[in-house]
Amino acid sequence: MVPPRWMLKAYLHYWDHHILTVACTTDRPCHMYLLWTDTPIRMHIRAEDDRGLKKMAAPKYCFVKFTELEQNQPGDTTYHTFTFEGWSFCMTRWWIFRATIDGLDSPSNTGIHSDHCTYPGTGPEYTFNIYASPSDATLSARHASYAWAHNKAEADYVDYSGLSVYDCGHKLSAGIYWIHRNTVYFDIPNWPQGANIIAMDLKLLVQYVYSAPWDLYILNAPEVSEPPTFADYAYLKTLTEPLLICPLTESAGGWRTIPLTGSARGQIVPGSTVKWAMRAKPEIDATPPRPSTHAYIYTADPGHTYAPRIVVTYTV
Image 1 (spheres, rainbow, N blue to C red):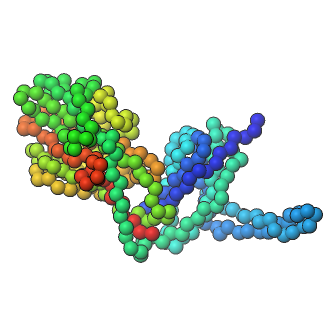
Image 2: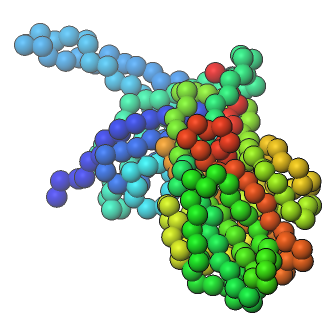
Image 3: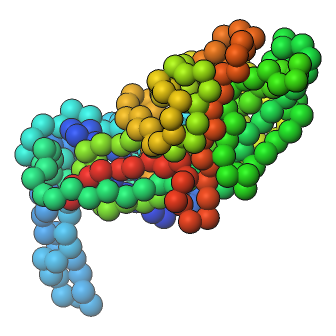
């Protein structure tokens, strides 16, 4: 049996303080391992025949004392990320890749990559914005019984971002309870090779908050459809542990800035799609609103004037 092979199609790495994230894609699903060393790579010249003439011209690179780092994703994938920790200032490391396909070792490998840790950076700071996808939406259900509306298997309405604002939370209007849950998506682009990430912030533009103060929960929603379907309403109900918390302490509108930390920050990887949900904490607690507890938050818009965004600050 011929051993299966793979090929590296795209590659990128970037810094987040002393942690290096490596991201790459391959031409076929495989499970990758990053093999790294802090021993400088040495090259030796070997003899080769050129039409009967022996020349000292064939380079051989010695890659020794390596440590193996497994990709973050389970199973065989075409998109691979590695969280490369343990760096200190002025450290240099070199690395290559190997992979298995369906559990079988592949003979394919790659060229040698390297970087030098210069955190904290001393260069100028730059920022760029990652805007929410127009797939975002509000999923709403209503009923005279709060419990019935809260526990419905499907939404009664799915309003996409063309309506300009999310309605997030719950309210009582003319004897009818309304429950509003939201989805928001970010397609993470590539950024400069070797960029040193200083900060990441989620920014939401709030139009108005009813019954402040209360907390808006941003939740991880990896299984939600894009765009969402009516059935996703019940799935969003199962999400209760926040990735991020946005305190809505006053009724007035304006930008709210939430620093990305922990696992939320770890999801912001070039080439990936982030799927999040938004729910009001009082709605998660399933406490019937008296009075209404909800907020209007601007959604994705064509000109990105009001859209939710992730602001990345970095040095190079």
